[in-house]
Length: 409
View 1 (cartoon, rainbow, N blue to C red):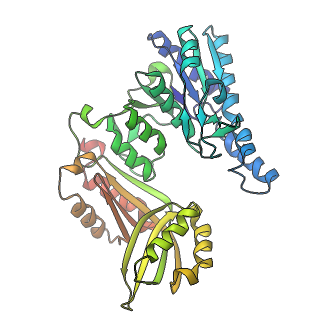
View 2: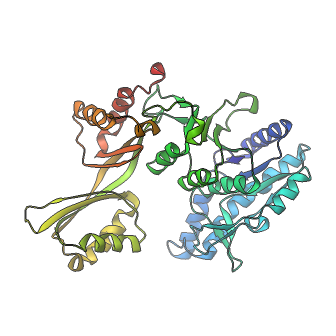
View 3: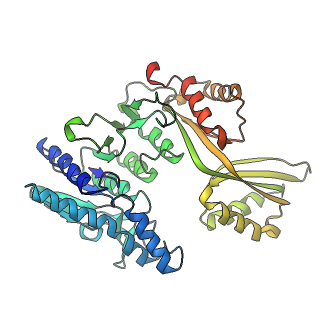
């Protein structure tokens, strides 16, 4: 069982988490719980590291030592409360359970996760309460897994322990066909394939962290998304994320996912010769900038091309700086940035075997006079880049066009 920051945001919510844990034990389960820091706590700790560390120090080992403390506090508080209610429990920090990572501080990868200590505690009748998001390096330093790392911790533990299921408790009662704040008739999906959830997470859905979904798919861990904001007896079935073979029938389109916080960079007049694209994207890769959609088209000059690509808005100024400094090497004429863009994606595993999705998507957007700037696709996803002002209109139109509203179910 994993509980996120909003689920453990104050003592009252931690007490409700304890009731969920005790309800699972009454059903006969041995329980391992992963917790995040209380809502807002990680941001507070990060701000302190920046104030006293002189800026972004997220790759420093002592940054990890500071920000990992938020989860440690929550784990201790939950274990204390469980014991006060007569439920045996003990907390584990990352180093105590033996979660070893590489030394990429601030964004570490799990190398080894022995289950002996946790299994011993559970076999002795205790609830193992684990501080998520953290481990230790071969050098004995505390490490953290990056934002959303508690989800990754939980799924990794479920795989290592051979758990029947990994329940992720959050502030929503499942995964919806789109953001209910945009489309009131959006409906909760009872089941999704790993691939669908992975695509949804990768294009902006905030329910689960991408790494955790990939890990669940790799090790075949069933994941259920549930709300922790209700009492155990009121909690519904949530959304089960499982293998494609476990789903009886696949809808052609499962969800429409908007993603704001996008930006577009255009390089005009790039030499149309082998190697220049590699130079551009090698530069950005080495700077740690992740690129999404890429479009190249001929320029007016036959020997030149125009290239545009999307990236996270938070990386825009850094990427622009790197590209500006390398202008002579890259050989482009002009560099243009656009922050007034958003990405909208339609996703569905049924797209593997059905045609016409792209046509319907583009026709729907054309009917609303929404211009498409970039397009990217995968086997089960089509994403378009549009002006940010049209995001909600596009989501509503596509949600209706693909019959995803509750009255269409």
